[in-house]
Image 1 (tube, rainbow, N blue to C red):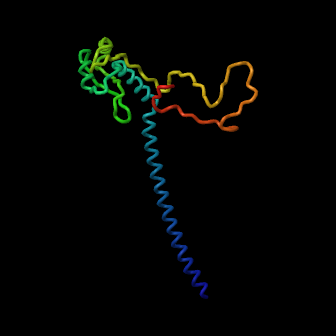
Image 2: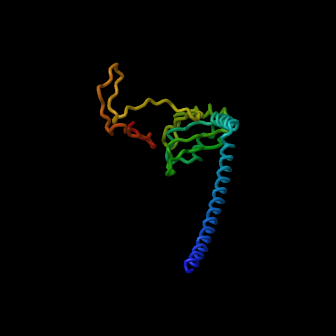
Image 3: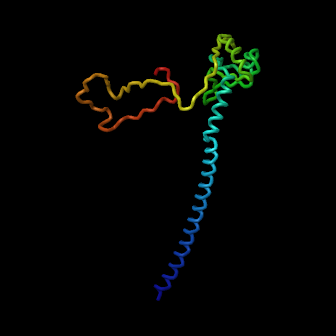
Length: 196
């Protein structure tokens, strides 16, 4: 008889525990639904950006802006956008000056100058090799970057994989340095490396 009472108490505890689990499951499902909704909204916004017609229009817009812009190299690190604007003011109305910086905010030594009129670009090209802050500027027309089109760079030989010649005969046997079937993974360098 005592065992029946204990079983009833145990059933009551397990029912509460089961209700607790159901409540937690319901909360997790609600959270998952909210996350799916947020994901769908983000994908919809990203899809709007990735729309081919919009992408073509933005590419055409970039080309139009680039046709009114010049690249200015060898810009002094202490130079401000206002000083670059003053230097190119004689060519035409300057819309924007962009001095590129690295992730620490230090100038990279080059700038882009965007004009309101495309004719000003030809005038700005005449300022090539002019001086600003005691440095000779390199001025050239800005090129349009085409996404997905990289300049061809030949593959460098891998020093860890041994010498592979293009001869008719193959080497008799080659011991891989990392063991059989293991190939080292190499990443392209993230930062500028002057020795490659």
